[in-house]
Length: 198
Image 1 (cartoon, rainbow, N blue to C red):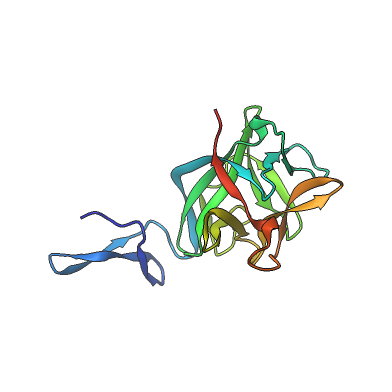
Image 2: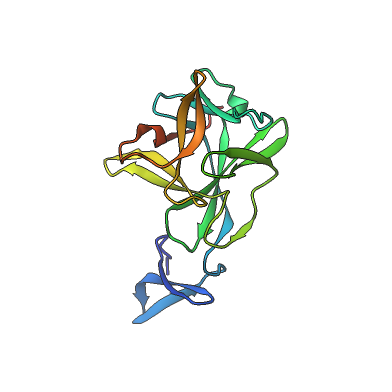
């Protein structure tokens, strides 16, 4: 039987079961997940992409900069600092497509982390393989920005509910930040992902 990717969560007391959308030989089919309730587990799937804002500027990472310019958007960008790997996580919370932002610069890997509602930092190393609990400073829910545009996304923090990645104009630069969208058409929180350029 071919398993559909959109499973329906069935039970969440101590372990997670999913109902497959179909019947085989007249019997409902269930499958046990490796995950327990309120957790994420890193999958083998990743997406290599450049992240563009509303002005078609690319997100560029500077993990070694602690002045507040750890991530800025630029028209003319350094591709080694703009080619992100979005690590996909399987989750039991079903709030959206769970991803972690990672990047490799000068043979060092970093991942994006929320410190609080105003501060983002890159931490050296790989994001964790498994995350327990219902919040995470590493996970962002990738969601469609609007029903009419399938190519534009928002990335909502799994740590600070209702806050999304956004860009702000500061000192003549567009800097990455977290903010609560003002409305559904808050373009500072809308991003596009384009395939990594060779």
